[in-house]
Amino acid sequence: MAITKLDADSFERNVIEGRGKCLIVFSRQNCHVCAEVVPMLEELAPELASECAFYYVDVEEQASLYKTYPLKGVPSLMFFKDGDYQGKLAGPVTEEQVREKIAAIG
Amino acid sequence: MDNLYDIIIIGGGAAGMAAGVYGGRSRLKTLIIEKGAVGGAAYSTREIANYPGFHAHVSGPALMADFRAHAEKFGVEFTRGEVRELSLEGDPKTIRLKKGPEYQAKSVVLALGTEPRLLGVPGEKEFRGMGVSYCATCDAENFTDCVVAVVGNGDAALEEAVYIAKFAAKVIVIVIHDEGIVDCNKVSAEIAFQHPRLEFVWNSSLAEIKGDEDVSSIVVKNLKTGALTETAVDGVFMYVGLLPMTGVVRDLVETDKNGYIITGDKMETSVSGVYAAGDCRQKYLRQVVTAAADGAVAAHAAGHYIEEFEEYKTMVAGSDQILLAFWSPMNEFSINAIAKAEQISAEYPGKIKLVKIDLYRKQMLARKYNVQTPGTFILLKRETACGTLSTDCYNTLESTLRAWMTR
Ligand SMILES: Cc1cc2nc3c(=O)[nH]c(=O)nc-3n(C[C@H](O)[C@H](O)[C@H](O)COP(=O)(O)OP(=O)(O)OC[C@H]3O[C@@H](n4cnc5c(N)ncnc54)[C@H](O)[C@@H]3O)c2cc1C
Image (tube, rainbow over all chains, first blue to last red; front, side):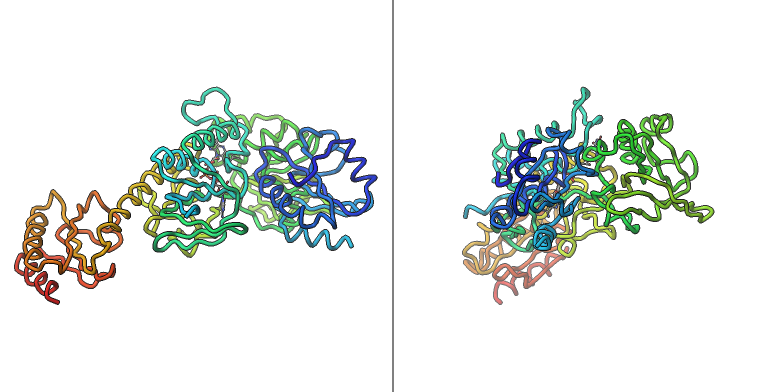
């Protein structure tokens, strides 16, 4: 898997205390839309590796981490830069939207 | 040719995987292409209560995992990818993915399924994933102790409303009909009507979804009075019907005005060698059991088609001119006519190859040349029809055949 899976501790270290841009996809088993979005991110991650780190959170395994953020559904993508929140995308997100969002963070 | 398959099935839901089981078991080289979750719509269904034989609790994902294992046991291959372009006329048929290789197939089964219909009200797209959801299994938990609206009044709407009420403090169900009228099975409707946390709003439709980053309210329109009422909610679940995911084949096979693929009872579409199965075709009941049944029929018919097609290719190989003679054991004239044709063609050795076709057993060529009556003769020159004869007169038969032989 080209995307690193996070738990609460590694989330803190990589996202909150991390440098540079990253995105985290919140996903769960049995979600049909997630099953389209997550593989798209897995394919995109190697290409954009130097610009943005890609992470993955399973919301069932990390229920309390998921509840920390006011997310309304899966899949949800949150974007951070140097530990600061930069916005989110949700639902059937496309590759183009992700590229645009990453570029827009600047 | 590693990328040439006997059957390529597009869509890995119940219909596609059942087609896979039948294709694989007939020893046909079979591939299933799925863009999202193998299991399709049933993958997000918590309980399938009416799949015959599974009367103990079975979840959609568990049942679909069994479908997959069954198909794989018979050698069916699965690949991930979104089909973007097809050429379906002729042989072999070509299938192109958004990314990745190009595949070729002798026959194709379209098992594309459906997706939720969007209502098209302001705010719906904007807040998708930010409070607007189409999947209670995926998202209901996020609304623990919240107020949620459900739009719709079919099986899915009421069953999912009851599920959402396990988490939410209040679920407002917006129904377009008069009080008490829903388009849902009686068992689920009763449960919904009696639920203490469900509140029904009748004669109403959703007019708008509002919010900042997330949904904060909805505007509901009373269809009798036209009055608009704004109500604070944290989320909206939409169950206003389904649309077939047939955009990719819309110009290639015949569909109805809603985009559902039209098939015959062998699941055959308007294109020879192309079949459709499951929720994406025009049909009466869209369920797992009917999707599976369609898949079985489609793969079986595809197998027959391939057999006939290969037979045909061997028949025509090496002959410049072919005379197709359609007959039926029930039609006396056609039997005599064929005997006559054989006699005549024997007088002109090496001129025309006579191929006899039982009209009711072999339908591929009959469909291809639009032949309906036994006793029809078609003259092919390098696989193109250049003469058709349908008669019940022995004299006409003889003179026409002689003319063809000496042409
Ligand atoms: C909420 C809900 C509850 C339900 N409950 C029940 C129930 O209790 N019992 C029951 O029997 N039925 C139930 N159903 C209906 C049942 O789920 C469907 O009838 C059945 O799953 C349809 O199967 P299918 O294979 O035809 O389509 P789908 O399961 O929709 O599969 C089609 C697949 O094709 C894929 N696809 C589409 N286009 C492409 C493309 N271009 N390239 C690659 N792949 C593509 C899709 O990703 C999808 O996975 C329910 C449905 C819903 C929505």
